[in-house]
Image (cartoon, rainbow, N blue to C red; front, side, top):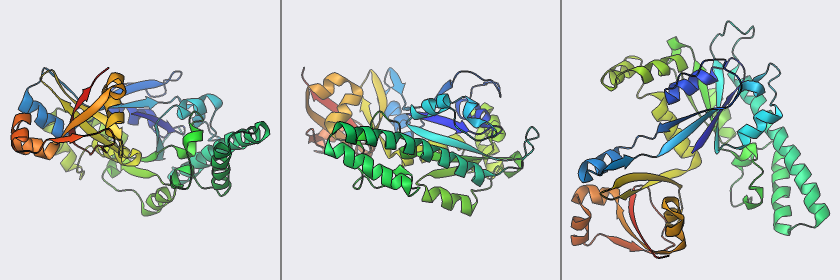
Length: 346
């Protein structure tokens, strides 16, 4: 999963990136996009690994992309280069400033930054959709494609982000390859001063994000960076002392999974216990392709054990003896926590 961190100048985007990834990228370091990968914690993987003692345990991963701040100029405009880098991401994380920055004359205005970013994304999408629709009409393109872009144009002209348009009302297949920004899942991070680390999102900002079909969370990047540097045994006490339930990374991952409608399934064998990330509603054959393309191509069936069933019985053999092993075909919809054994032939 690729999450692009974006934000206007002085919002603390790179500090948030460092807090999430544990890297030490210098603040203000310009130039190329910085990448950092974090492991997605999952107690189910921990338990499976303890039960099976595999040679290797592999967690799902989330990749953060700290996109250079060309698009964070004082004019709050998005540069062409910044736009392209943003379009390449699966989801966007907009860092909003809610602290006094001595390098900036203006006071923090998180809602203003959110509106400026949303407007830039909408105008960029509108330009792409208008040009593609005009070309499609001139070239006599497929009616389905024309209808999809007409639907997108109508929403954008109403200043409605495409992510808020239900899938039943808008066919998104023709949009592949265009990287429409208002159709990207959006999570806003309100970056606060250290003395306000435990405060929640303001209700007005939370309501505006909900209207945009976006999510949000509040954090203090310097505090989270300090949490990330602590030994695990000291981390919980420090988090509790700040009035937080858990570090921001855990909250971020949960919010991102919710926005992207992601779930995890597992493969479990003596060689490796591994988590795989898919979208909710994915069918068994497509899920098999996440493991290996040959499995999707030569799919025969999936032997399925829900995690709770495996945890209760302790082994695949015990599950079989209890008559609880599910044998499913290609159209089975994989559920969160399913343990899959894919049978295939190529």
